Image (cartoon, rainbow, N blue to C red; front, side, top):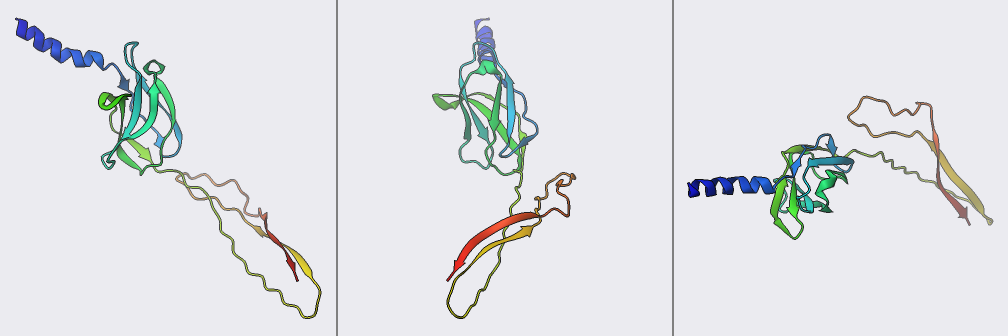
Length: 172
């Protein structure tokens, strides 16, 4: 009888200590902010939060000294490759090998792209004699927005041009 009770107590004890349960993160995008949520009770210790992936040699710490009773954390996700094999771990702040809880696997989407433009122009000035000249150089450019995954237009009219200042030069 004693050995059966001991086996039962040993099997139930770890579950009683690990009351933190993560909700699986959804709509996570690399480089953007979203919320991580979990359930916990008053006896759960302060923890650090780590992002795991099979390709990482070490997990990435994304939160430290987290009060488990908050049950939510707003986080800016690190820039990582898009994949579906990410998970979170709540770990002991003094010994990261001691894992309190782990989430189910979830996806992180690719970081959004940003628009950029490169302009190049060449000016040649030639003169004979003496004197000086100066020029204010600018041109008009039509802005473009990097394409994304949505179907919405950029909202910039096709006939919209923006003055772009290039420089001021004093020719001698």
